[in-house]
Amino acid sequence: MVQSGRIASINSSEIKILQANYSITGPGAVSAPSSSKSLASPAALTIRDLHKHYKGASEAILRGVSLSVSKGASVALLGANGSGKSTLLRCCLRLVEPNNGEIELLGQQVHTMRRKELRRLRRRTGFVFQKHNLVDRLSALSNVIHGAMSTGSNPRLWTQTLAHRNHREQAMECLNEVGLSSYAAQRADRLSGGQSQRVAIARTLMQRPEIVFADEPAASLDPVAGEEIMALFARLIRAHGMTLIFASHDLTHAQRYADYIVALRNGQVVMDGRSSDIDADQLARLYER
Amino acid sequence: MEKEGTPKKVTVPARVPSAGIAGFLAYLTAGSLIIWSLTGSELSMPQLLRGFPEMGRLVGEMFPPATDRMASIGFTLFETFQMAIAGTFFGVILSLPLAVLSARNLSPHWSIYFLTRGVITFCRTVPDLIWAIIFVITVGLGPFAGVLALTVDTVGFCARFFAEAMEEADGGPPEALAALGASRTDIVISAVFPATLPSMIATSLFAFEKSTRSSVVLGLVGAGGIGVELMTALDLYDYQNVSSILLCIFVMVIFVERFSAFLRRRVL
Image (spheres, helix red, strand yellow):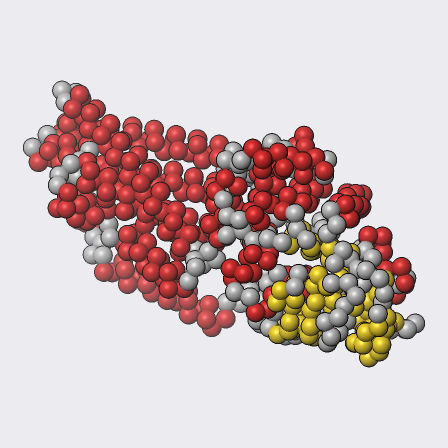
């Protein structure tokens, strides 16, 4: 498949944005989105010319980002602090409202959706946050059961005490998958950082999403716990056949756990390609000031 | 990042940061307001000194406290306690939805936000004694009027603090549930309520203490409780019974405050 688009390449001294043709073949490709809709593998996510400028900020955080991610791909978003990674992920689900641009997620136009439609679409997607975002005072099991809210609003999902037997059993299976079944009754605020992130992943598994966004899932953990979480995360995503887009600062994680890498700098895509084709020196240059 | 070799100029900050013209005007306004209030309050030291012997005489008449009406005082004291619990209970229940609607981050629309904020402020602005008079006129004499007055008073107090707790709660868990497509109700009940529960319990216990003290006064206008006994004793210049009633109220309020403080320590 050959596509035309705005891509980035790296020379020895600096990152340059180039206008060029490039080709990526096979399933799970990341590419600049084509104007034509005839993609070899159906796109899970297509973003065109996305802009975001936070109120009061001197500069835009996203400046015309375009990319396309095929179903089943695992993509790492890299870039320095403030490059727009988290904003880009949040814009995909309109947790942050973009100012301009188009987002097509799982075949639906996110940017034009009404609230109710957006909620329905979000139910098909998972989001893992850097700070876990568990409900502290509830048990690990209750937090995982919350993942089933993707099946619709139900008062029996508010806490494990009210939950239906099926939901409790499914949640226990998810906790078991992340190796925390013995911590089901433990309050979330009494878990370690690594355990909390495992519970957050179990919540996402409970949701059974088609695509998972993860905003630096290992950033708040020590290197060993971070490595364990990323390995577990990547394994589960593959096992369940989901598409994964994760933001990270860790170049090793990006190369080890992503099929493709998209690099952002100053709100623009400056580099993308197969993770095996991009070397660590090229990536390290993203963080040069 | 500074380059090596660049001379670094260090400035020591002032011990007291300059307040600027706006700060100076704020201090000046606050000072003027206090002086203006003191002059308008007709403070008089001679008048206070002249009143001391009268106060001594009144205290003398109060002792020893009477014990002949202890059964009746005990009964109305329990009634007061029941009124405080019932009023706080209904007030807290009504405060929850009002707080959600009046929390800036949860309110579905700005018009609802302003409307509910207005209702809460109104509940708080009107004194509990006036609410008691209104409900005595509406539903008649007795503890029911007192419970209604305490309910409205508790709404004015709790709904405001509940709403503020909800506004200050960590936005992470609600964002996580929003990201997976949860409804607004699911988010509020599953993520916001658990996060704000300690604060809401503490506020409710403060409201209960406040209701206990208020319920004493409500009886003065016929809204039930020990205030009725107190009013009767005062009308009859029966100061020994007045002192008994005040001591009983003191014991009840101390008990409620200590118990509430114990529970708050356990919860927080």
